[in-house]
Image (spheres, rainbow, N blue to C red):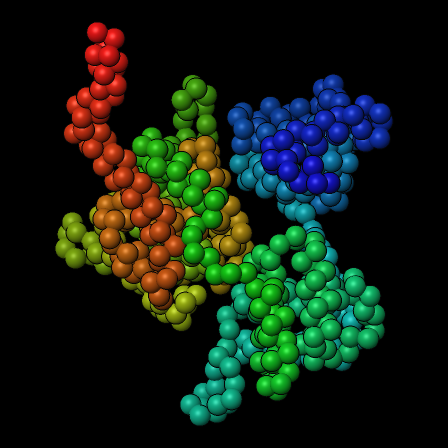
Length: 529
């Protein structure tokens, strides 16, 4: 084990691959996947002939091959069929992304149902997986369930109408924080159960803030993670929240405070290695140009999809107004993130006429502003960004031409949902659409939150001392958070200045160095003479 600990990650991966190969050759692992021959099916062949070519429906074609082999007719395909396909793929390939592949198959199937004539109208989707490494709350005694429900309801309840009512009550948290507390509490209870605590013995929320429970639950999760990470820190923060809610006495607080401190990671002072690598990629001129011009390119693609006609390969494409609208929505979202790098939840909840304000100044000029109130932002710092002419032009084209083709366009959301006009677009699907569009056209994965780091890098490259601009644009409440971006840029610029100084000094002292190194040779010649 000591020798394995000295291996680098790449060497360890190579060793693991060799062991995996040997085990498979010995028959101790599942056999490798064997590609099955293509089987014809008249019912499916007609649908496949109308399915557009290209990678957009690649996963769907693999799913159709599975249906043909299993003798499943197109009209018989349903959600259990997709579940069985996901299980079959996981068993054959042994990968952890089988369900994600099947989920994308469902997305492509639903898209084909909208675009391909004669395609079955059945909508496919995987059922939500139960939370791993935890029991549902209804598995615990009813007394604990009631206290947990009361706790989650109280911390997220809106403020009282009376100014002086509930003076001893903590400030209400956002719905996302309530979900985080609920998730962490389930995992904490599960960690205690895994260390020997009987489920029926957990009858009160006060047990969660006892030193014995904290040691058992956090130690189990720390052993699984192998480090004190942000996940462990959130669980420690949840325990602190419950302690505040229960008004834990000072003596008890003094006992558990050191335990929670051990499970809380140190404040981050620099950007992560993953973010640093991404910024290096976006620092390449070609890659940066691609990201900066991606919104206009996506909008151009949306126009072609809406109009239909021959594509670049000479194939006829029928007009696809809804698919074009989704493409235009992605173009607008990237444009907004470039100018106002907000968090995804704030981008998702932009409302026309409220957070997004467009007004016509005269016959040709428009004025646009994005304004998000502080109560809707994570750190209570309001966001106000004026929009330039290019951004306004993209927004107007999206609002006037493409957005009416989306489902539920009658709502106020800039990015409406697919089923309910009262709800915006699903946060997970929205963020994934942005990331995958960038990956498709640039070849790198840039999630919406990474636009914040990219904006900080652009600002500091233009002005290395504009740390206040970084703080203002990203909405940081203090300079210390903005310094996370500044430190990396400052170090790189300092290294560049040092290199330039060394080059300059070398040029200035070249003759002296030449004379110095030639002197011993001259002295030896004199002695020989």
